[in-house]
Image 1 (cartoon, rainbow, N blue to C red):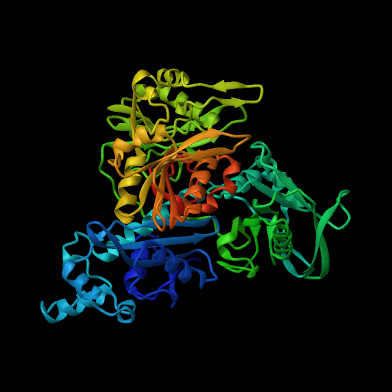
Image 2 (image 1 turned 180 degrees about the vertical axis):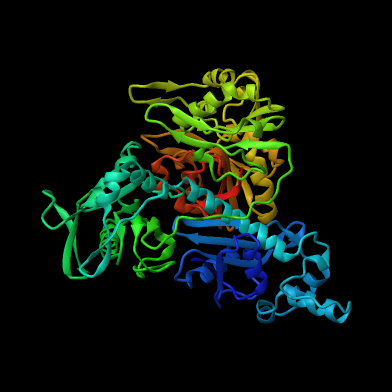
Length: 625
């Protein structure tokens, strides 16, 4: 049985979901309340309404739509925020803007405040068309009546398809774990020993993938089986903290007593192990009642830190879609498999007649090109095993995507490129969403040398005589001075979308370099704030500006990439200390370091792309490949 829960009883939204998911899904609607104005105005209120509706549903997966208006320099526009909540986390998308008719907007604005909050623009339009034009339309579906090429249902379907696609692609990247369920004290118990024997690598890979799209800087593992699942994080040098049972730690500890199904227990963490203000992932082997994880969360709070997510390979369900644990908020729960879950997830693919075809490696699986090549990325112990149908590529414009952050996978793609020309494609284009070697920063690794800007030239030559496209190279000279490389700008795309929704936000550049690179490109040379920065001890950046900071003004920081976020944080703090109303962040690339976990809470909103897809939270991605 496959269920999908919708936070609405509106046929328009239910049908929009049915347009996307396969027919074997049962769509269940809920009478969910948004808790906001009937006609929300502003993106933040719209998002709040979508989350409120979603939080009223206790089953997974669930989807919520919230529609409202945003005010821009070009008038008022209708927009929908869609959030899909799954066992892999939440996925966000925004619909394209639909211009609201000016005469009806004037009528809506003329209402007193209380009436306006409870009167939708759609109801005004519907009344007008029913009485004047004798056309019977729904207050929820007025798009075509005002000149849109798509109905509202079609717009909702396309917006939902974005999040559903990303969910399904993430699922397809996840190893299929096979839970062995045994009875223990008359309750279902998943025997993790079975997986440790049969698929140990899949178990740790699943845990690492579940942590994607989260911002954290500390891992807490639960005694004792949780210890087995931390290996993938150790490779990345992320601090691991053990939460141990009574009298197991030889040092001074912080301890908490908690209730279990069969009595009480104690769990402890070493004093000083979690730095104040940390963002923590809690990892265990199974989520059952959740008692141990909730106890560890209370311990984390004692260290003045917060829990970002609870991650397990397995969870116990009472019935399909409903967890045995009902005390942990569903937006914080992430798991790969339950004892009732059937590993079959699909979506309706639209027929594509384009001559383009894309080759997407596993780490970029969530990218949504028009047409994907059917390639299987298997792996032997010490070599690649990539399988594909040659005839599928013949005569096509082949686009090959490369994730340079994943060195092993990038080598596989380069190996594939070396033989593609023999498969008779019409053309081959290489797309590098983020070229880390183009940052001009000297990136040093322990005992393994360093990366330099000159590597861009070498990379281009390795790609061969193919068109190579990348985005927002940090070092300006690399745009023109090196091999056959085309540089495009995600920052420009993000700015155009952001500025349309936030026309009054003043652009801020953290240094002269970003002001020069993006000031002219974005057309904001005259209306901008530019900072200067000097390096202090460690990751500290000292920032200052001679430009005028206005009390009550909203600002947006603009740059090409962010690693730790310390400079962005210090600029934002400088602005907020001088009574700025809000500060947003906008940048192309998110190759985040764990240190960024302590900096991003300062921003009202974050706008970036999925060029580093496993690093960035879904709700921050406003431009997708």
